Structures are given as structure tokens and as C-alpha cells.
Image (cartoon, rainbow, N blue to C red; front, side, top):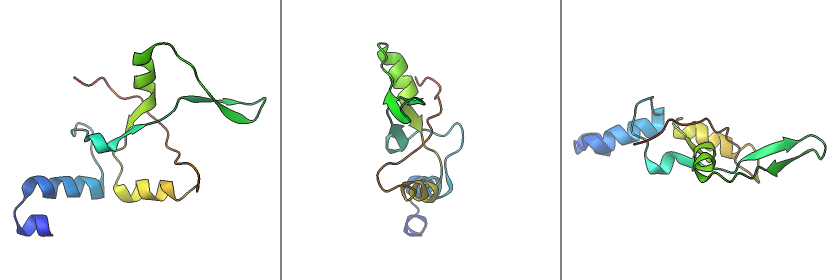
Length: 96
């Protein structure tokens, strides 16, 4: 409401995207890029184990994800488990 009253169009647009979610083609703000660990399920041990890769480009591509959901949905994910924040990483397209 403050951004609208002060006619701060950039701030208003950013707030709306944060509250309602980003759409394909929107610029990815750095605070919405999640960095995770690549892990695989080991059925013999019944736990997740790290995946070791020597190609740093592949590691970066597979371990980063743009989280474009509304901030409320992301907040709900953090409440599901007290120890970890689980988020499935989807491959991103190459950025310029």
C-alpha cells in the first residue's frame, strides 16, 4: 500500500511478485535462487547420500533452482520439518 501511495512502481511490482509468485520469463532476483546439495537415496542404508561429481558446471546446474512460488507457500515448506527445508530442484535454463 505504501509503494502504491508513493507511486513506487518498481517496489510495487516486486512486492506483488513476492506475494503472488513469479511467472516464467520474469527476471530471477538473486534472493530467490536456492542452492542445494545433490543427494541420492540409498535404499540399502535407508538414507540420502551425497552425489560426487567432478564437472563443476553440472554441479551448479543441478544444485540451483529458482523458487518463484508466492512467499507464503515457501514459508509453509519451512514449517514441514524442523530440521531441514526440502525443495525439489528443477533444472533451470542457462542464463546469459
